[in-house]
Image (tube, rainbow, N blue to C red; front, side, top):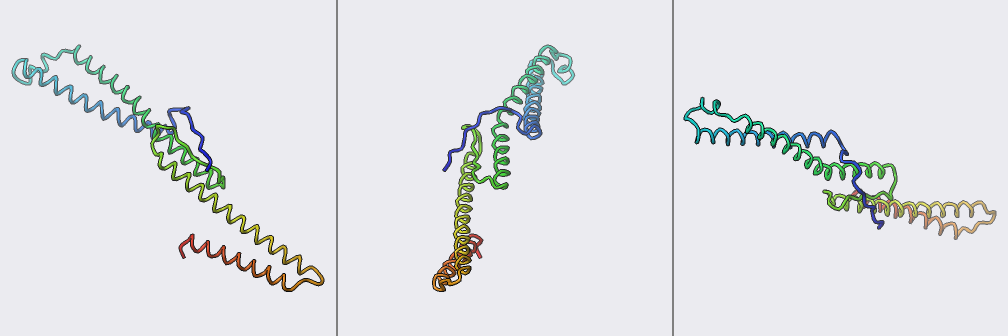
Length: 195
């Protein structure tokens, strides 16, 4: 089994649309939750320690405090967005490489193997893909060997028939061997397809 080559991260945006939506969703979720929690804490604080009533809440709002909370929310959201971009790369990168390898495999590049970085997700998928590619390569090589053997037998039969005094017994043996090879191929195909 050929060992897949390890890859290093070159670009954090493998699939800009998927990663962008993922990061935006995380940023928006955290921002909304943080804003709601902050406003509830602020309201609760002024309700407990300030004047009684809802009107006093709006009269006693410390705008510097509110600006600090909003700035912290923005900075926190940006930090979380960056971290989510990093995390999404561990998902988008492997999917991109797997898709690329599948395209190569369908084009007949049977030596194609996929490898992910050590901390990427879907390591088991890469191992399964590589097992599939190896099994497919082995199967195709075996079929090509059988076809080459059949072609060789056909060539032998044709050569014997071209001789003026061909050996009938040798020709029959070659035809029987060719028939056996064809039946073997048919049996392999039936077993593979399940019918």
